[in-house]
Amino acid sequence: MAEHDVVLEHVDKTFPGGVRAVIDFNAEIEHGEFVAMLGPSGCGKTTTLRMIGGLEEATSGRIYIAGQDVTDLPPSHRDTAMMFQSFALFPHRTVLQNVEFSLKMKGMEKVERARRVWEMVEMVGLGELAHRRPHDLSGGQQQRVALARALIGRPTVLLLDEPLGALDFNLRQTMMVELKKIQRELGITFIMVTHSQQEALSMADKVIVMSDAVIQQTGTSREIHEHPRTKFVAEFIGNNNLLKGTIKSRSGSVVFVESEDNLFYVRIPETMPHVEIGKETYFSVRADLMHTGDHPDMANRVEGSYVTTEFMGSLETNVFEVGSDTIVHVEQHRSVADHVYQMGEKETICWPADAGVLLETVTGVAERAEAE
Image (cartoon, rainbow, N blue to C red; front, side, top):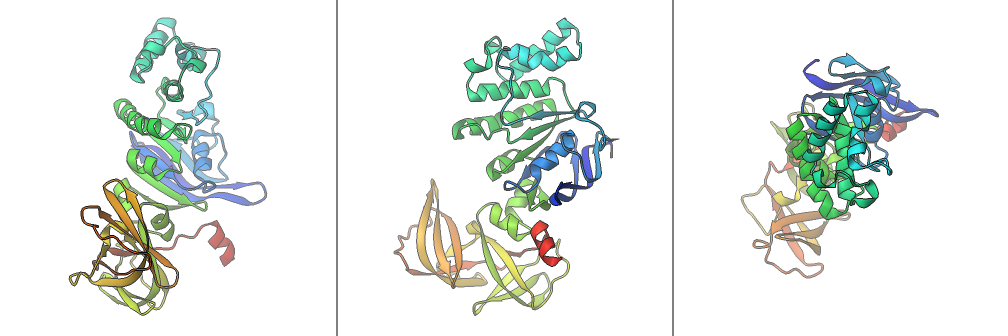
């Protein structure tokens, strides 16, 4: 366990009144990893972050930091630091004074304290602004001060609660690169909470997707984007198309799913050893793996009615209505998608046999309550 900076074992959190905020959370985070907990508001990600930092007590389960069981320890006895979205800087103190505050409280000798503070201020690019106060700084500069203050004590783990939420788009893009760069230089484990899939997939080595108090999927950015395991992840991440049908039969690693008189070849993921014939199910197909027009070499095809086109720089996504209540997105480079559709125009949409993937079911609070 010592090789992991953070380990959570079967961690639950139930608030007064029986509200279950986190259910059976398990994770192992290695030294130096950048981990993002991603999900919509109310899914339990911030509560989990606060339990790691000791700001919330776990109802059950154990939490370890650098091999030490800290489940029942207060925040001051855990080797963590927290960076909040609001920055929470001292308005009457300069950049230097904000950054040095924790070292001063620990009684560190003045010369050593000054050396470490200057190193950190220079690292976050604020050397020329060291004597300014927060009201004289931009939002991005204030965030850098908050980051320097959180890192000055060299904690084992830095906890970041929506760190980029207060910044505008362009500044957020810049700070994503800066955060990752600083994390790599220091080699400190970062655990970040965000509801932005762009932030999570751009910065994190490992992404933990949560919904309805449970973990839906854990994996690298590429794994989460290209191989969603559940219906929620497929809807929440990337540009996936969700299709529904009934499993009619199985042949090796492929099932045949029937939907509104169409029969689709769908790949079974390695994480799903058992498939129930006759069960109603969902499968996903990435928008960039679908193609307009008839492609005889592709196993799956369906007819759709054109709805609209979404332009995204060099890419464009044509949107079609398939069947009675299904919308399908087909993402292509503009050089390929040169057809100008008319509203309601019929088009054949095709995709390879291995492009569609069967989705698993993860039971969250709502499903558990319904089952009970």
